[in-house]
Every structure is written in structure tokens, then in C-alpha cells.
Length: 373
Image 1 (cartoon, rainbow, N blue to C red):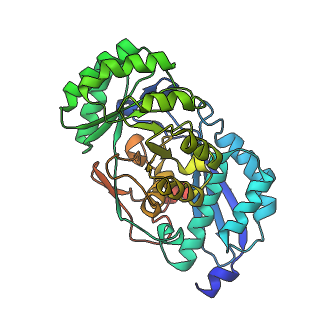
Image 2: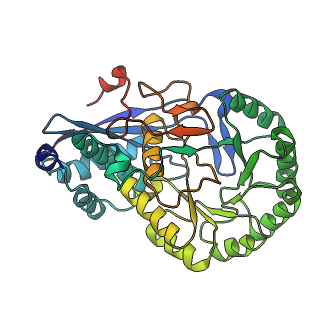
């Protein structure tokens, strides 16, 4: 550890609202709504040494209850006063202060935590994955979401194929009969050997989920993600016994949530977000605990932009138990009409590669960097 990393303090924290528009060909329509733009917030931490770190608050009001407005208010009124002037190392001490000062707000905390870890890792001239305990891997398999009616599924699939994607999940969770028909169509479209899972986003009652599984089973769904309400762990457990791997997403925000899912044996795979977890180190910790209990993890997505996707990737590369069988959702700037980072992550649509650069390994476009305040 360099002396500058130990001695550097947080000089200032700045924020920038961004509102990227989803490419019309790739808009995701799920049981919880349509995601066609993102009211996100970029956070910049500037150290006394001159080193800067960036993070992204990738929250949405309809899903996480946070957006750029709520995040900026919390950061400026609550977090800046307790963080400015503090030493950057150890980062976990800073995160403990954040936890005490701000209730809930995991995506807001995650954006700040990412910027702190980025600044710290850049101070040491190492990747964030190494700062989080070490890079276990340098590439991560990824997938793309299909949604909407059959015409929409075909349209999005063709756009994704052109980008190089080869693994998919279909948004379901509304009407079991229609979902069964749509899944059969998607399977025919992608081919019998292509990875194709499902994501209900809590949309079903237990009986509806069972009905949907009975209709989809012959078309080999790779997994059933969050089929029922987040708190219905008994329902998740019963559906898991049908033989299709169950992925817990909305059921797992906090460490307490993860423990409850483990105790209920309610999932085969845990979908871990940097945002849901409250930051990179918390996400890695949750993956480590899931791994200790024999469960795989994947990195889930709330439509992150380039900075958020870079954080997802760093966490994925440091996380024990990350599944290589079930691709993660590190999509990033593929999703939007215009990106926010200078150089997109290195991905061919099948896998995404860890950057060989300090911290997150990405930098904002200069025109955005000039707008911080």
C-alpha cells in the first residue's frame, strides 16, 4: 500500500444527473413495467492527492424507489458532511459511517461506495477487483433480455444477435398461457441448444407459476427467475422442487434477505446487484456467503450505464461462486443510444473482459466530466 493511499483524504464529492435513453430496439417490457430511459446519477469522489473515483446510482423509482433526484439529495445533505475530510483508507470505515447515517437507499449507497472503491484502487494502481480481494477471473459470460409480444421478441432478438449475444432470458410473469406460448416461440427462434431462461419479476401467484412451468417445461427453460412475490420464500421453495433452477432476485437485497433465502432453501442461484447490495464490497460478501452454502450467483442488472456496468464486472471478477453456467446481466452501454464512458467495456456479446487498468478501468467522456458540480 502506498503512503499516498493511506494519507489521502476526501477533498470533495460531486454529482451529475444523466438520463440516457434506451435504444428503441432494446426496450425491456416486464411484469413490473417498461424501462425506456434511466434517471441515474454519477458520483465523483476527489481526493486530496488529486486522484478521482467515479460511481453510478442506477436506481429507478418503480423498482428500487430511488433515482437521480432522491440520490443527489441524500448525498448532498447526509453523506457529504460525514465523508469530506475523512481518509480514503480503510474504505470499509467510510461505508460503516454511510450505513449509520442513511437508512435503506441501497442504490444511492452503492454509487457512493463504488466511487470510494474506485478512488482507493486508483490510489494503489490496482483494479477494483484486486482491491476487493483479488480477481478470481478476467472474463464473465453474459446474456440479453427479450420481452414483449412475438413481433417484439423477434425484433429484439435480431438486434441482439447483430451485437453478438448468444444467451437470453425472456420476461414473463403476466398471463401463464400467453407466457407459455411466447416462450415456445422464443425457443423456436433462438434454437433448441441456445441458453434461454425466464424472468417473472415477482409477477405470478404460486398457482400461476406452476401453470406457466407446465406449459414451458417441454421447451427447456434454463431457469425460472423470481417467479413469485419477493417474500414468498415457501412458494419459491415449492417451485424449486419442480426441477427447473430457481433464481432469487427481488427476494435478495440485504444480507438478512440472503440468510432467509438460504434457510428456506428457496433458490438454486442468487442474483446479486451492486445496487441492491449497497456497493461492491457488500456484493462480493453476499456472493461469498452464497458460495459457502453451495449456491451459485449471477450479477443482475437494473439497466446500468457504462460506469455501473464496470462496477458489475469488477465485482463479478472478484466474487467467489459466480456461475459460469448461468450468464450474468452485464449489458451496460449496449442498452443505450449514447454511452457515458470514453471506451466501452471489451465484450463480444458472449463474454465481457476485465479491463487492464486501475480502479473501474473506465473514464467518463470529457464532455460529461466537465459538467460536474
